[in-house]
Every structure is written in structure tokens, then in C-alpha cells.
Image (cartoon, rainbow, N blue to C red; front, side, top):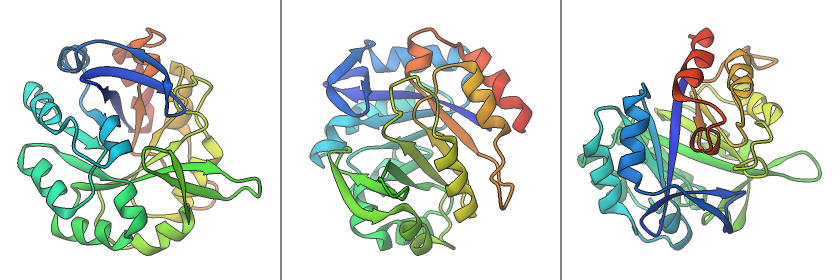
Length: 251
């Protein structure tokens, strides 16, 4: 399981939000400096999200994302405001390793299939979900400002067979809370799809990372390909070195 330290961009700064709420944010300074610090401490991947673009649909920090990717020598996965095949190709041409499609893919799942077919392994589907009272997982869109009306299992059925590099699965209710990941939701996605799954949301400790590394879904016994960690790293609750060690048992 890979550790993907997260860098979220808002108004040119690295920030962390709680449950996607811009009114509950903390600022952590220069994004490129933060990226280099993660890599200097051993990170092998980075996960970068343009929060302003995710909300507005415009590439607010596109140049910053490209510059950040050039400033480090590890693969960078990015999302936020990616609304077209042209956006995907612009970012891949600039050196990003993998591009995450969120809102656009929820509105048109065929876009994710087409982009992945054109760029096998370099496109991910972002599944940011809220759990409904009946237990179903509803995907959210537009920077988590709205429910999409689409259920996660419905979307997984549509993209089954597409050569996606990953599903980046975020439990919105857990994101930025440090309360632990939604293990049940992740297990359900692992059983419902053969695409590699990267977990996101709620990781607050090394123990949480270790639990995700040990997770095997009930039916298919599938394991996670990676975990995105943000606030726990920048707040000093765990180090890159500790996170990498916790990931290692999963291979």
C-alpha cells in the first residue's frame, strides 16, 4: 500500500479543510515547500487537489499544480476542476503522473472511460461519498457542495473494465476529522470493483494507516493500493517515515 501525502490548494496556499468546509480551514504555507519536505522525508507519491477549482470548475491553480509536479522527483496525482479530456491531457503532458476525474465523471461517466482508454493507468475516478440513512453511498460533486444523485455502486458498474489507474475513495464525513477512516465503506468498494482503490478521509494516526494496510474485503479479500493522508501529517500526529512503515506490511 502506497502512502500519498496530501496537499490541498486554496488561494495559493496549502490548506486542510474539515469535511470540505472552507470556513473550517487551517493554512500550512507554501505548497511547493511542503511538497519538497514530504519528498525529502521519503514520500514516494504526492496527492494534490485544487480545492478552488473543484468548487468553481475553473483551473484556478493549474500553473501551481504543474510547477509543484516539476519541483519534485516523485509521481504526483492531482484532481480538482478537471472537467474535460483536454484538461486531462494538459495535466498529463505537463508531467503529472495521474489525473483524478470527479464531478465531470459523475455527470458523464463515459468521460472517465474515454480518458482511461486513451491514457491507460493514468486516470483515476474520484469517488467522494456520503452515507445515506439507508446505508447506500452517494457520490458528491462540485467540491462536495452537492450530492450527485448517483450511487457509488452504480458508477462502479459503468466504469467496470475501463483501464483506470485507481479509484480515489473519500468518506466526506471523515475527511479532516482525524476520527479514523470508513473501513466499511472502503471494504464495500473493494468488493464491488477490480480497479485499485486508494483510501482517503479520516486518517488520524499511524494505527489508522496500519488498519488500512491490513484491510481485506469480506468477499473478494482485496486490499488497498494506497492511502491519502493530509492533516495527520501536517499537524505532526505522524511522520512520513512512520506512515511508510505502517504501509509496508501490505506489500
